[in-house]
Image (cartoon, rainbow, N blue to C red; front, side, top):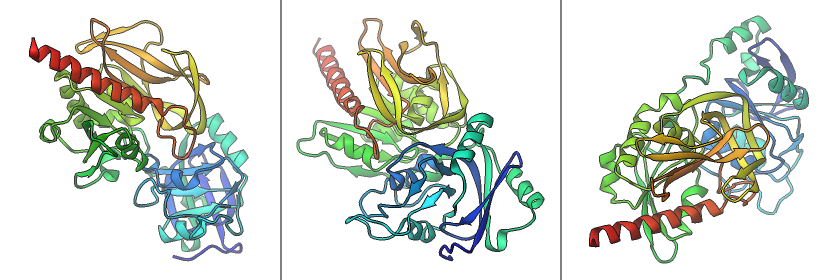
Length: 389
């Protein structure tokens, strides 16, 4: 791969025909994906290594990117996951004692085609008005006339109907040991899990068995878990039939469930709700969400382009219990969480659409991991009493 030079031209082409000229930032070549923007001013390393961004070309709304370089501690997976990267004003040199290389070096090493020096504010406004769409970045030998490049973009697959979880999931199970005294065992289905998620569970005394996205209920039972967890991940939740079937079986067996992001969408579909694609999604670390049980507002980390279609008012009966919307986005009333309760009002399962581990980002929602521990504890106590009776 060729490193960046201010003299190397690059071109960004949107599927509606709009183009932006800039210079190479990262690898030289060609890439296509869904153009999305994220509003975080920090945490670009965590963003780039988040598997939920698989298949997407990420536009940074913050103009100055790369000033803290790239370190060896903050990756959320084993590689850069984005299809492409778009920035306005790349840092000339990093300034951080933790930095081991520049951001551009990391992009080049991972073969990520990027573009810098474009008007990202104009691009973001365009995506807000027209919605997320396919995009291509072209440089070097990939550059051609705009009509040819536009055809390449328009021939790329769309995000609707994309099944991507299997692409980013672990190929083999592994265990994250509990910190301190082990209290519970949880089977976590890796749909694009971030490193900090099982770490957050482990910090609370949970031994986490991370399983591939293709796992069956027999695979889950083999772990003898106290609960089931579904992670974040990329793609269209309507394509995840196998994972929805697994979750349906777990709910039938009364296994306590906690899901985040993609896990929230699959929970909604398992409960009988539809999902739909948002116009341009929620991405960033400054999204306001209200926990309706406490009426507290949290500033949260988001990365999702799909959402659950569920009634905000009132409860819905399901074969597993009664479900209500527990969290809502204050910007646009998008469903941000679901709770499933028994006829007696006992919590059975819950999910949120955002990332409570907040890496990088706020820690307002960290209490949700504690809520899951409480659910596991309550379920264990209730089961013990029922068995004794």
